[in-house]
Amino acid sequence: MMKKKLIEYEKEYYPFHMPGHKQGRVNPLKGYDFFKMDLTETDMSDDLFHPKAYIKESLDRAKNLYKTLKTYYLVNGSSSGLMTAISACTKRGDQILIQRNSHHAVYNGVYANGLDPLYIYPSYNEELGLFGGINPDNLRQLLITNPDIKAVVITSPSYEGLILDIEMIAGIVHEYNKILIVDEAHGAHLFFYDFTPDSALAFGADIVVQSLHKTLPALTQTALLHINSNCVDIDIVDFYYQMYQTSSPSFVLVASIDSCINYMTSRSLAKQMAYKEMLFNFRNQIKQLEHIGLMDDDFITQLAKSKPMYIKAVDPTRLTFIGKKGLLDGKGLDEALQTRFKLVFEMASLNYIVGISSLADTLKGFGLLYDSIELIGAMYCVDEKSSCQTDADFGIIKVVDKVMKPSDAADYDVTEIELDQAEGRICSDYIKVYPPSIPILVPGERITRSMINYIKQLDAFVIHGITDNKLKVLQ
Image (tube, rainbow, N blue to C red; front, side, top):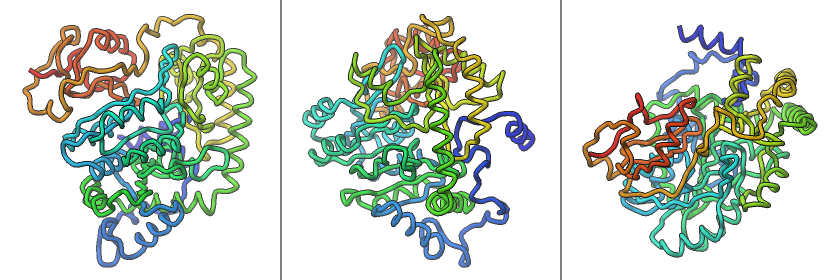
């Protein structure tokens, strides 16, 4: 039974992955029976879409806390918030500028609204296969040469914890009277901690979407959609908000959102202080190791000496391990940590691994991770690429040949074809490595030989859109 498997996982493994409550190690809903809380809209309860009682009071508290024009509770995750934001800020067929390494939920918003996406490509470190930030000159030029762009969508922090200069980006976007949407799914905690950079809400983003469950003690699927400026029509947001949420929103998830925010603002100070001390002690311990380290501001500064990265800061809560004296066999280290020490990370790349820490982590958990890294970390640091690494960059996003809008690809008949025979054909589905769920190919894009070679070398990873070495193309 599934229940048995979930209980076994909790007993056997320690999670350096989402959700941020770390299997209930911090549980603001502790003591409550979820089944007794699982209600529906009645005269005696409330309605998330038309709140009049305690849900309205909760939403008003959130709006006042975040100092937004309106804050929405999301029970379908950040994905629904991103699709709501994109739909509310565009009309069918409009142009939209998106960061090419956006999450596939952004592309779903583009697809669903028949939008014409233009791409801004982030800086990229080829050795690590690591995306950086946005060149402000490129952003400005795209807005000048494409005056019909209605909105700009960027991601900050990235999966690796890299934070963009939102204030600079917002200034440029607003200079050309466009709307800035920030996918801050991995940064809900930034608002609360005094030891991290601030949230995009503080730097002029018009709409910000945050996943509470990724880094804070809230149940999976819980997220927030913030309206942060008068240039967004709230009535239109209301319309699409209800479209992308379930018609029967879970009262348990709504209660989890409310309890999480309440916990972070009024009950977690001691826990935050303890977490801060554990986290930075751990980071300082790792600095003493010879072969393996954690991505931090100094590391990004060093990378930027050879090529600009356009990164403002690194989120210290994100545990992205890299090699100090060469490349790191990310996949090998990830598998060793899982099988030998029962430590499960959020993501393994070819050249680094990503762990998520939160205030729910324990001293024992950090200690086990340090001991494990100290014991075996050096074994997975290599001067040259190992056999499990490839000549292709993990998560590679090259300049693509967009033949048609993604939604137009839906108008064509589709056939399946062997991957090796797909060169020159037009992709009809998303091809993406999960995680981080950034599309390598989007419907309507031409498939190149380099993309085929790259996909073939990723058999150790979970690839969506490829089945039995076949992918779908337009006839």
